[in-house]
Image 1 (cartoon, rainbow, N blue to C red):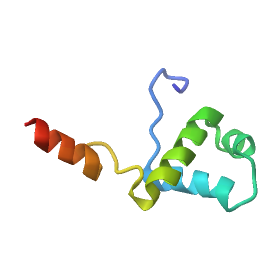
Image 2 (tube, rainbow, N blue to C red):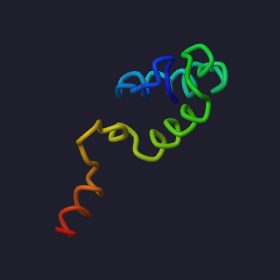
Image 3 (cartoon, rainbow, N blue to C red):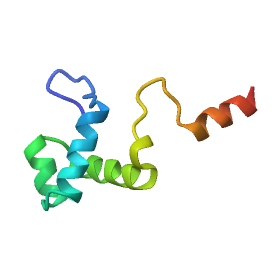
Image 4 (cartoon, rainbow, N blue to C red):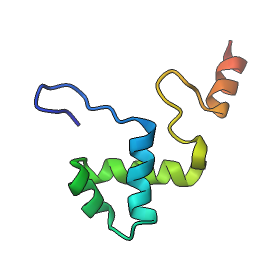
Length: 77
């Protein structure tokens, strides 16, 4: 998803978790939340799946590997 200037929008970890919790705990649909935040509903559903699968370890941030990705990288090198 790109903004008006053609740059990709980036969302921090707290934003993603808050958006997911608006759906899981707030009683709103994913479409409603996505529309109110100005994001694509598919993006929100991906965040929801990732958060459901990984919990608080989801969204480690750019340059920060998950434990599994770090182990794979270690084994490859």
